[in-house]
Image 1 (cartoon, helix red, strand yellow):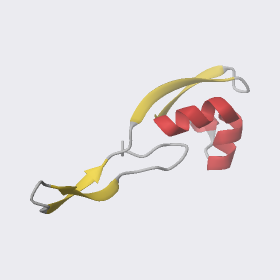
Image 2 (image 1 turned 90 degrees about the horizontal axis):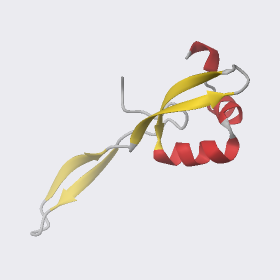
Image 3 (image 1 turned 90 degrees about the vertical axis):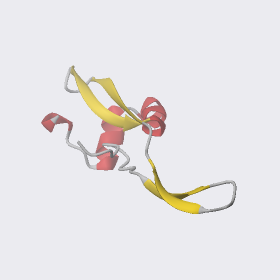
Length: 78
């Protein structure tokens, strides 16, 4: 599975690693992804999602159904 948040679509960012001599080499800044089991009240079951930590915080505020609808994610297929 690719390293992409299932709700926000966040993925790796291209950046530079800068040494002490200011030599720059390219690197990837990966998203902090976590597997999270979330209770889905409408479906009366647990849903396992790969979420960024930012999405987990937003999920607690918005709720799963609203956030999934906003992201265009069909929870029945998970």
